[in-house]
Image (tube, rainbow, N blue to C red; front, side):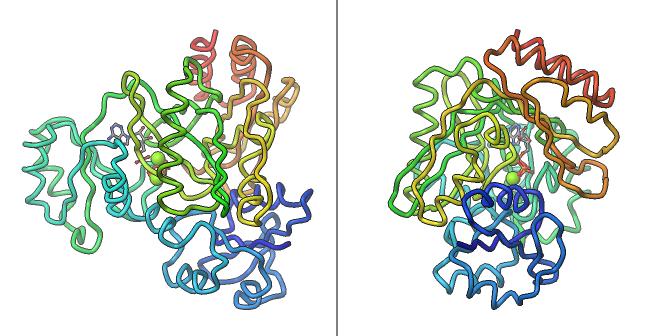
Length: 377
Ligand code: ATP
Ligand code: MG
Ligand code: MG
């Protein structure tokens, strides 16, 4: 079987690695050049995009910001999974909010802004602690602005003056004082079978995911069921096929949806060694019409992103239960270069392993690893 993935980054690479044992060949599309590349070496394959599409059993995406012309072309074949509407919901926060509202899924209080003068009303109705998000092309906290005090509003407006808000509106959200950030990764196939993973707890820094712990601690059956029900409502409602990630804020015992990612997700990387079936394998199983795999955790895991650096000691692999996944990209500030998964059999030991990990990573990792380690003990 063959699956063509739009996008040639680390997620396509990890799908390729998961597909090999199943005899599923994964090819990647570099959406900047429309060329078909090998997902690991990135060398151009001897085929055209049109031919690759024709030869594929399924077409899928590794990111939501694939140019619409490519998505439309892919959708015409009826092989695109998830479907184009689901991908566009993930790519456009206005569509995403409309979907959440229409399905009555709890989310952050918000307003859509198409003219800067509407920001005054936002402050009146939502308060002066706001997060402004460009409706398109944002990720890792890019394309976002924060207002913490009404007095800063004029300066904020000035800094936004060049934006064409009619074409790309802002979604203005009330800043939520959440207890913590969680995510639910789930998978649905064309028969409507659904499996969801245990909730992961996610630690973000400057809008970017740094550490996930899964299964999250202090999750009772009711909270996991609440997340599962949100997933089923959304995935059934969109007739979704593949892995879908739901980013959540926990406020008391209530879950609010922050955003959706119509693809495999960074907060699900722990499943590579911490779950019976990884999210990558399950995504391929779903889009290829194969039975879905067990999503149970085999023990508590942590996933630590390596961001913006490549100089660390591979000796970290001396920590039992640790695995390194390196993406082979050139170093840039804030760029996700790779990640480390650690799986063990209890949270205390997971905390100790995170502590040990801090010995091998650059100094700036120390506070977050020690923080997580202390929390888990
Ligand atoms: P991703 O890389 O996950 O796609 P993104 O750039 O699309 O990120 P969001 O997930 O919308 O951005 O926001 C990034 C982070 O900013 C969130 O994980 C959370 O920590 C914080 N954040 C976003 N919205 C809110 C909110 N309404 N209230 C409080 N914090 C928020
Ligand atoms: Mg996002
Ligand atoms: Mg996010």
